Amino acid sequence: MTKSFNELGQHLKQYLIDCHSNYKGLKNVAVERYNNLKVSMEPEIYQTFHVIIRIGISEAVFIMPEGAVFTGSMGMDEKFVIRWLQNTFIQEDLSSHWKNASLYSA
Image (tube, rainbow, N blue to C red; front, side):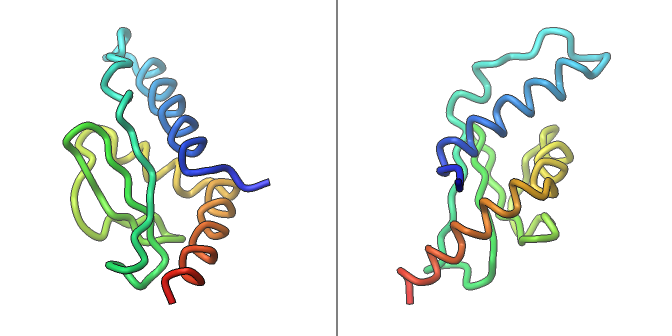
């Protein structure tokens, strides 16, 4: 079953916390940093398959399925977000959301 955007956001949050806590230089990750993490799509603005990730004041649009940054920046989290977006299961969930969003925006 396809995960909701909220569930995807929670999954990405946990993934980022795990990545940072496994990194030698960041033993104590500021978990609060990811409390406002949002995953969304805006087919009215971007007509190609994409996902928008917001973490605090950072926002980036990623073109899918490559996971390449189209606009914006994620700072130190960007490489981890791209790696997360390249996960097959995440891509399947996002693809399902894109198909639904495309139908409703047409």
